[in-house]
Length: 64
Image 1 (cartoon, rainbow, N blue to C red):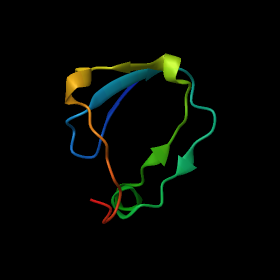
Image 2: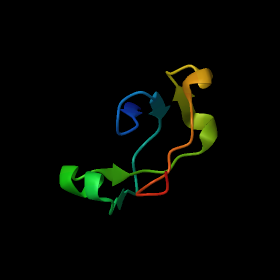
Image 3: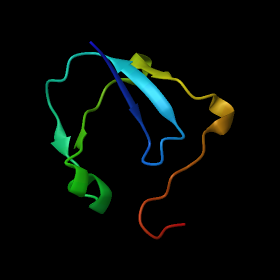
């Protein structure tokens, strides 16, 4: 199955193909409120839908 996702703000979009077997609950304040789950796949299964030139680093919490 193909799943689509994005970063928190929606600027970076991606899709991944695979079967969800194990997920982990994210404990950050944003994901906890939304009930988001983490699922890890090999990089080869990930396809960026956003141009690579638009990528940047995301620092969680106050590590601006």
